[in-house]
Amino acid sequence: QVQLVESGGGLVQPGGSLRLSCAASGRLFGISVMAWYRQAPGKQRELVGVITDGGTTNHADSVKGRFTISRDSAKNTVYLQMNSLKPEDTAVYYCNARTTSNISYWGQGTQVTVSS
Image: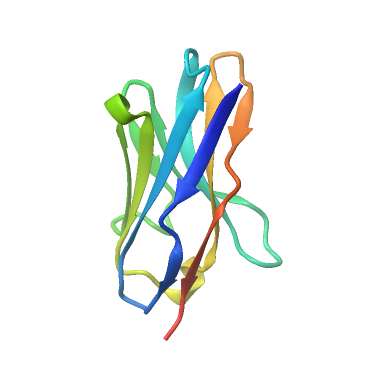
C-alpha cells in the first residue's frame, strides 16, 4: 500500500502563488509516475501535471507556464508550484501515484480557492 498526504492548499487572491506538497509513504517500490489532478465543482477530474521516475514532466495546456511539478526523491515528496493563479484554478487538488503494474493510489485532496 501507498499513502499520499497532500498539504499546502488554501485561499489566495488572483495572481498569487501556492505550493502544494504530496508526501508519499508505504511501499514506494514500483511507483513509476506521480501526478497532480484537480476537480472543480460540477466538473470531471483533470490532469494538471505529471512527473515520471526518470524526471520527465508534462503539464496541462491550461497551466503551462504557470504551474510546475517537481519532486524531492530523498523526502519522497512531490510538489506543485502554482503561480499567477486564476479563479478558474479553484478546485480540489489530488495527488496520484501509479505503479509499473498500473495500480493507482490517491490522496485525500486539498482545497485551493482563488478569489478576491
